[in-house]
Length: 165
Image 1 (cartoon, rainbow, N blue to C red):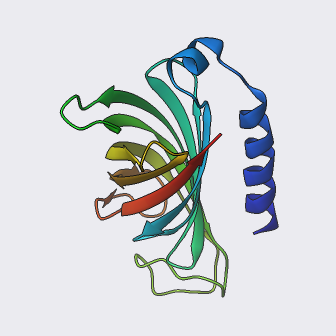
Image 2: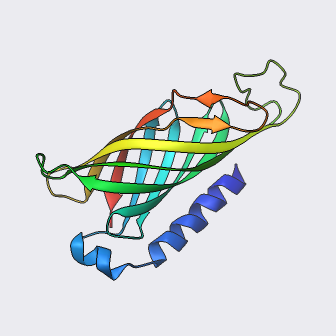
């Protein structure tokens, strides 16, 4: 767990250090940090790297193990609703379940460590709350694993409350 917290902290520092002046002129923020809750609970850091493109790092707890996902997302405005946009993208994830601490649902043996890695897709909607720095998002993130549990996780959905700075 210390490793996950360290990776999250280093990523936050690295992402907040980058500035994209083109994005800053179009929107009033570059970086967002948030709390995710749904089928998983954790955190999110989103950094815009292009006017419509963002990189998002998610670190969350699932089935008493830890999963991190790095995604690229393409954002598009919904013109009919001011302050609302939708996004889609993809990336990869890596998860760890330690012996005796968490038991993933694809096994009945708790006497060993488990890992899972694979590819992710994401589609979601993002809304700016009253033209403030706060945003709320809802997304669906299906994932396919290549190790230990080779299969589809199609049930991952979450709300994210973000603060933009």
